[in-house]
Length: 305
Image (tube, rainbow, N blue to C red):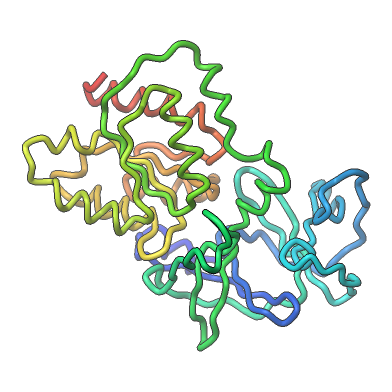
């Protein structure tokens, strides 16, 4: 994992994708989400769980849920095989195992080479394919594992009700920039921020769009009003959040913008990398109430409250 750490620390806009197969089709996951690969183990079924949840197992004293990815993606109930593998993941402060058929390998590519699938593929506002990449001459569907888990267990995702527990809020006119590629999460974050009084939100589908906007307004006299604070995901096609953070904090004018990295990938290691790139704060995506509190603090420190 040393090479991955160097890539993320320097904000080079690259990603390492682990490729795996399900019924012969290639899929991918960001290596940063993967803790380990292991042979499929015996699973204890849990009554009344989601149909894609096989049950639970306990490797090395860590109890975790097993999601049958072939069942979730295709609806096909296939016999589990001894040769199946578990991809053990960690994101949004959760350890989850996903059953797959084979693991092919790891490819390093640029986020610029990952395209967002159009709506003819995603079947609605937001599908489970977060991007399509070309690795070693093959098209690989990169799955949105956060959306898969949120669909199976909605309580693990952003809870707008957290805002109500913050008490009475006043309306704020600050221009908040949001770089997030998921339509579902964009809506959930915006709904939460609006409920918290932050109604002036400008959202971008990826870091590149946010960066181009900042370039277009940085010489304007009302720059601070147009970009009071930036919230960014890490995983986004074309330009990721680490690269965006580096570009903004390396610019003599833009660097005064407070940046909050709001991502499912936040852990101790990622915090070090984000801090090296200049992020002011880093939060895991379910922490929407904490996000609002941090926004209040950063804007107050900037003298804008």
